[in-house]
Every structure is written in structure tokens, then in C-alpha cells.
Amino acid sequence: MKEYIKDQIKKSYETKIAIYENNELLSKIEQVAKLCVELYRGKNKTILAGNGGSAADAQHIAAELVGRYGFDRPSIPSLSLTTDTSNLTAIGNDYGYDKVFSRQLEGMGQDGDIFIGISTSGNSLNIINAFKVAKEKNIKTVALVGRDGGEMAKLANFAIIIPSNSTPRIQESHILIGHILCDIIEKEIFGEGIED
Image 1: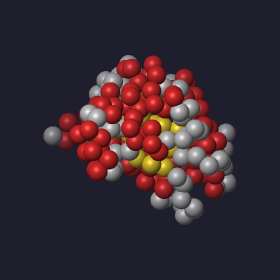
Image 2: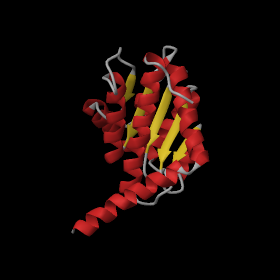
Image 3: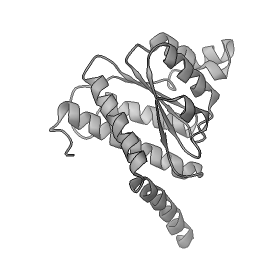
Image 4: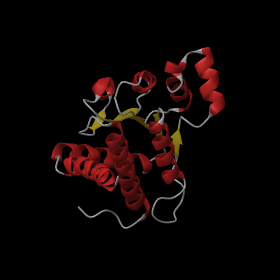
């Protein structure tokens, strides 16, 4: 069993090394970080959504921004569309599950916001529909995905595609990138800034 545990850790490490060595992917993460910092220097917010484990990631990232990540500072506006059970169940019942995020984004998203859709496959219909609403409302979109990026990567303004076909490895890397974004945002807005 110990060897199996070591193998799982090694696979996670190898996925992160693949990200570390991919300059194109690193540039996309940097672009998204800069976009978020620019947004937070104005009066806008990030909005996140995902399904299952990705829903938990959306909530986790939003909580790091609203609460705190690395140090005490004023709250940063961020919203996860996966937390309001009344909205989710009413929209799911009245319009269908494929509309649970697009309907919320239609009501709460504003010009200049950023919508981050999280999916291991990149083919979550409810997030694809939210991307379409975001385009209509001039909301920038980020696809945090894996595998080949799926349909979400084609629709997003920025696609961060984890180089893996394994759902656990993709999800582990998504939260790493979420933490990197939170760290950069927090330090650039309230700290001493990030060294180049």
C-alpha cells in the first residue's frame, strides 16, 4: 500500500512539473492573474462555478478572496454560483440543470467582471451556457480545464488547460492555480507586489 501511496504522490508531482515546464501555460496563468488584478483595481468581481469537486474548488477560491489568503486585508469581492441551494434548485426545476449558472450570471454578472468556469472535461453544459451569457454581457471568461480543454476552451477568453487526462490530477492542479491567483491578487492589491 505504501508504494501505491508514493505512486499517487509521484503522479501528482509529475503533473505539476508538466505545468512548471510549459511556458505557454505559465503565460496564460500570468495573463489571467494580471486581468484579475486589473479588475480588482476597479469595482468589479470574480464569479466562479463548477460541478462536483469543481464546485468545491469554486467555493474554495471565492472564500480565499472574500476572507483572506495569506494575510489580513480588506475583503475582495468574489462570488461562487454553486452555494445558493434555493437558486440552484429553483433554476434547475424551472429551467433545467444546464441553466443553473447562466441564469445566475445573467442576474448578477456585470460588464467588466470575470467568470471562471472550472471543469475537468471542459464540456460541462451549464458552464458552456454561462460562457455564452458572459459574452453577451461583456464578462471575460476563464476556462480552468483539463484533457483537451473541451468546448469550454474554445469559448473562453483564456483557457488554462492542465496537461493530464486524470480527474484527480486535474483537480489538484486547479486548486494550485487558484491559490496562485489568490496569492498574486492579494499581494498586488494590498501587499508589496510580486517580484518579476
